[in-house]
Length: 439
Ligand code: ADP
Image 1 (cartoon, helix red, strand yellow):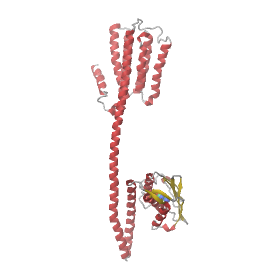
Image 2: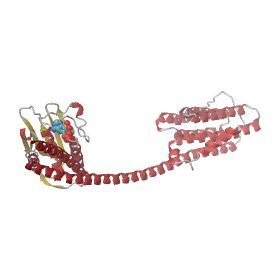
Image 3: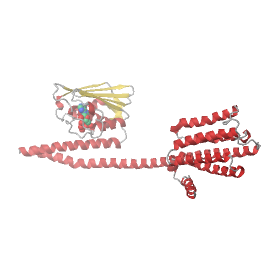
Image 4: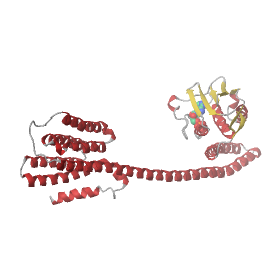
């Protein structure tokens, strides 16, 4: 018994909202409230039982008091064993029933019906949002019972009365005071929960802000790292390429030529990869720099710069440009066109009689629309959803790094535009770009 009482106090203290941390309190606030209600009810019921025992000895009232105490203790046990939902409904059904019973078995001037008010407030406070139907049910139930008691001479057990003597205002005042205190207790608890949630929210906002700053710092450092590493790698690579070119011109031994050509090839690929990293870094590091440009001219320049690519001469280019000059970021548009047109050349169908790439540039409203279509090898259905991913390659034919389309998408998004792709394997691919551009 002693241990049980101590355990009771221990539980009360362990739910102390002053010391418990906000997170713990907030996530378990309904369980804490329910436990406190039950502990409070248990103490109140013990006092009432002792009073009834002293005043009325072994009367029916004392037995009813003991039954109520048992219900409270059983509900408390349910909460401790994780059956909160059952405990809430069990406790509220029985407390509403006892209120009806006492209200009909005791003279009406005692104001027993007032106990419906803390029961309604309790229903508001203890049910989770997912238990909204139970919350509504236990708010409506006491109201219906109150109407039943007030609007008729309803009694639960016929003419059975626990007491008939009228005590005037004395009992009414006590019951009114107790119910008001109970309602105040619920309201204070809900306000406390609200205060805790506000402070939690503030803490959360602080920590999000700190994390955001840390991420921004890391991002900047990473960008700087990518930028300087790729530039540092590029300088020695350019000298190797230069020296190889010179050696190729000077050398006349077949084997030497073969090896130098291999070096030229590999360094060419490495150079392409580093250029892509520099493009990526440039896009994420620098602001948009809009100027009046003619996309048609950029396309022509890109096509002529790409003539060194294998089989570029097989392609018949068709450019339809009705856009005129527009305010766009020249550097970024060049990167986009370079990636898409070089892909159209790289992934051409070498078995096709005539390979072609059609480029259309037009203005529609406030947008610049660019379509690039080819009759190349196309992209298999299963890969079409992934081609804009970083380092993704959809064919064995690719000798690149799989970065190109990722960078294109990043750039277009940076320009607040969209890019879509349609492709049929063996038939060809079409990219559709739309970017906001002022004339
Ligand atoms: P990479 O060309 O370096 O492999 P990209 O990011 O530029 O990387 O392209 C990703 C993949 O999308 C390529 O590996 C290729 O399989 C496919 N692809 C891109 N453009 C075309 C195209 N015009 N025709 C066919 N396949 C393409």
